[in-house]
Image (tube, rainbow, N blue to C red):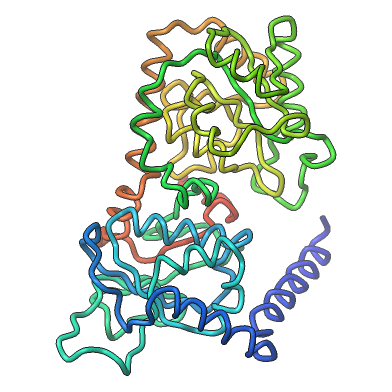
Length: 389
């Protein structure tokens, strides 16, 4: 795209974001209703009451709705990573941020926090262990404040912590993340699995994502299906699924959600039945919730966007990677001939990667590291950092 058009597009996006951020001014009544609902659901205390699973306290002081992410998913992930990591959460009730608090994912996340009012603090109030803020450089009621970044025009800098991509919010909300050990220990009866939407119209290449251009989802699924064509197991009803779960299938198992969509409560169990998961890229950008969910239950991801993880995934250690259609075919051949010993080693690497880099414990440990200076919510949307010469 010519440089003047790029600049014009950036200007238009900036103008649009500014309009959305400031429309709370003429939607005051709506924002006040969101605040009242949140306050009523949480009891309206100035400071969160002690919870038995919380060992530390964090204050969220966010102004920009850019922190929401897609339909509130990034804010939801941030809150749940902190909660599961042992933090008790309070939040400064800023109407500019609460204007989107009626949306399901964000509303669910807000219910995990309590409003914080400076004028209602008890005499024996103790400072928060941590404050995450997209405005204040140092919050006076916190021992340590970390800036929260949402900009995507510049690469991450030394000291920036990349917030990990996470699950679909319902995984958190239903407590499925607390069953990972059970899922990891289940018998694996399928070799490689794909489940999801894969229509060409929905998942054709999105040109606005310029950091890398993987093979689009439709072609990825089509090519793997063609490679295993004679032995691909298509599942398109509950009866077929029940039968498939009871027998070993040393090939490709396929569920196209346009044809058949199993109940969402079964999703992690399906992932955990397979040795490998075909983590075809998402729509607006390559990363998808499914890839993270597969890693969490110890299913080895097969993907082309390993570099978007922080740190990057490593082929043959915690994933199978490929480049282009020819690389995808070679990856399919590797998977087809891989022995049990190699698969078990890979699975251990996948679980180690999750526990070391994607889990709530790892995220909170990195937050508390004194070398961390800022938290970036969208590292996968930033330009790749230049390699040192």
